[in-house]
Length: 258
Picture 1 (cartoon, rainbow, N blue to C red):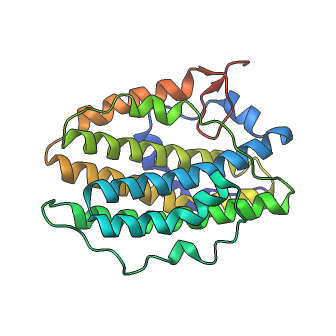
Picture 2: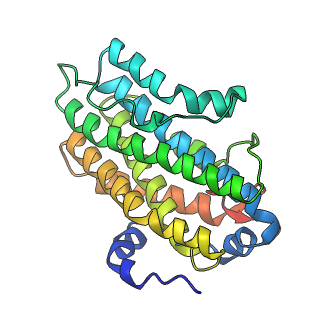
Picture 3: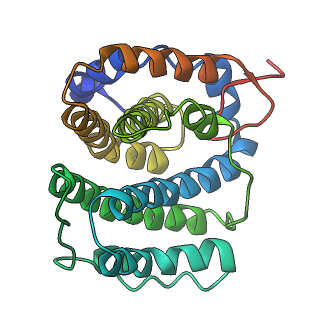
């Protein structure tokens, strides 16, 4: 049965308008080949952890004291142990382990907002990590270490080096990464097998909300119009997505071989 996205058009419209280009057909052609599925799932799994780690970094850097920062590191440790130290993947409900344990620090007006939105994001991303891992296990796809795509590094390289614009830029980048993830889930869902397709559809609402949360925080922290900076990163992100890329990853660009 083909996966339908008819009920998600009002959600996907703003995502597509925010991004500077659609995912190239050449990338989809490679991503939907059966031999690409193991790497697609492994890299998707990694992306979920990286998204949680990014949110943890933002909270620790801007929103909480050292003791709370340590609690955040402890929260993500079982996942990092699995990925980086090959520990058993028994997370024991770790994604919900931090409920009620953090408080925003004084001296930063937006700390509470960052804390509220990013803690929710972390919980969801860690849950998605476990869900992708379960899909991999069901298909006999072992977890393996893969190199990162050029994508995030290509965006982070343009971040300004003085506050509050460092934070504003990183929040804008977060919005683009989440928006691109949402767009790719939607593009892939009708083209992959039904179980994965339905799973990807189930991620659309949370990914769309993450994009909106990042963009809202960027506007709040800036306290002024950021449309020019959003346009700058829109062009940079579109260039990374459309230009030839020698690696295939969840966020890679157009396959160079194409």
